[in-house]
Amino acid sequence: MTKKSFNAAVLPRMRLFASRLISRGDAVLVGLSGGADSVCLLHFLRYLSKEKHFLLAAVHVNHGLRGQAALADQRFCRDLCKTLEIEFLTLKTDAKKIAAKFNLSPEHGARKARYEAFIKLARQWGANKLALGHQLDDQAETVLLNLLRGTQAKGLAGIPVRRPLANGIEIVRPLLCITRAETEAYLKNNHLPHITDQTNFDDVYTRNWIRSKLLPLLETKQPQIKKHLALMAQEIEKILGEKRIRKDLL
Image (cartoon, rainbow, N blue to C red; front, top):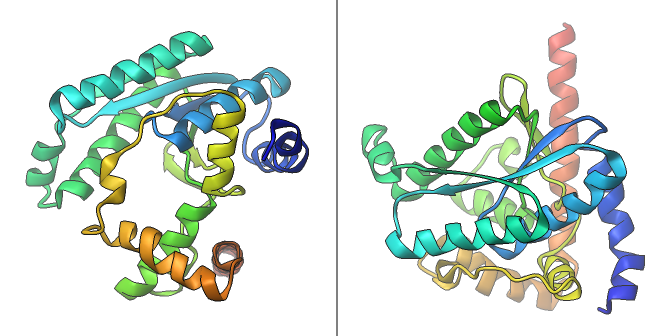
């Protein structure tokens, strides 16, 4: 997709979707790992912040798990923010220690450490929104992952577009309206570098197996399966939200 066609077909959709999540005067902290999705999100919100007049900064969390590789990721994110003239915040955590303390898997320990760091830095900086780079493919993968694990209706709602994180701080996901291929097209059209996480290609992780094996197989029968799953998740989230509202009113 050329830059001209992308700007005509995809960028308006991104602007409209993000405008429902971020308002004038917000203070938005972007979770920046250095991966394609987070770089796309940061660059896009930098562009949007000038139009909608909200504050913007980036936050990078070093989980203390990958030694020099993690430091290289941190330097990449710092240098990118310097180039884009965006304030850069970072914090190193001990994911192993947190995992042991709460009897969690390494993956869930890293997630808990990451969100604790997000809350701490968001409060220090004064953010009321934390923007994360999940996109439509992530949504489809999450719905299938929850289905395989066995889930209630809430699991079929997948990744919420927005949810409370802590008092006065809300998570928003402005890229859930576009696909992974579209984030990659955005990076290409804007000549943006990014980091590739090699663990994304290891099929020992069920999500990676869904991404590399199951979804491509389903797409041979239904090329729009990712969008269909994302739309289903959106409808279920809406229904569950309405039920919660009605319950609160009783």
